[in-house]
Amino acid sequence: MAADTTIAATSRGRRRAALHGGRVESWRERLPVLLIFIPPALLLFTIFVILPMGEAAWYSLFNWNGYGRPDQFVGLRNFEVLFRNAAFLRALTNNALIILVSLLVQIPLALWLATLLSNPIRGAVTFRLLFFLPYVLADVAAGLIWRFVYDGDYGLVGAIGRFFGHPELFLLADRDTAMGAVLVVIVWKYFGFHMMLFIAGLQAIDKHLLEAAEIDGASRWQKFIYVTLPMLASTVRLSVFFAVIGSLQLFDMIMPLTGGGPSNMTQTMVTFLFTNGVMRMQVGFGSAVGVVLFVICVVLAFGYKRIFMRND
Image (tube, rainbow, N blue to C red; front, side, top):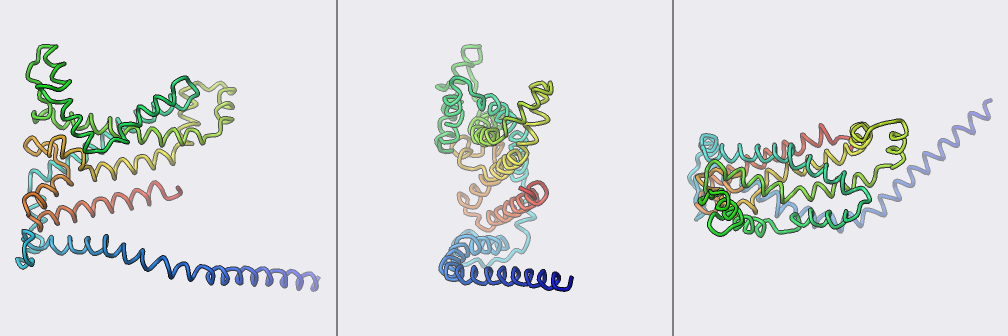
């Protein structure tokens, strides 16, 4: 009995020693690689990420037009003015509206099309390509194209309006319809990306599970709710994450489409930052907008990943 205990202890000791030795050897092998690649990466990250963030936070405390050195210290007054600014509150509301439409319209539409086009039907690959093409198109080009489509004089929407007896149909120039027109373009532009994510997730599902559910008498809706959707949970969470963060950073398509107008009705936080911080040279005020946008993105990103994507 004592001999068996001694042999077992010796075996465990050898395993621990081998494991420890493997770890030491592994770190010795990785150390030169780490010393070569980590310092340049940290240097680039510091120069292009950390320092600009710190400068933006510093400039937000000054009333500065970008010329000379910032010397008119105003503390948190830029932030106070910012949250009393009706245009910024409109931009904040528009970002929330874009997120809501992305979650309630864009992602369900992409999921529905993905379930249709993931089946081996004739022309499925062609339809995938057609639906994905808008995402491949550059945002600026998409904005310019849809600006022409919405044109009341020469565009497709104007022609349709004249056909039905509405000769003056300028959707992008109307305060009541401009944001709705922008939302249509956003859904058209980005639903293909989410559709391809869902198609990839659907192709990874074991077909035997669906066959077993069908043998048990499950309907198509029941198979989707109790088999497909739970298996797609991680993909759905990832798609929602991309939709939320992308909605907060929306800029390239808004500027050629409406420029934030009419009367700031289609402003987002990024277009508002560009308009005030770059076009009007209110660098201190624009930096305050950047700080608020950064905080919102960081809180949402890390909060979402910690709560919903903890195990992904």
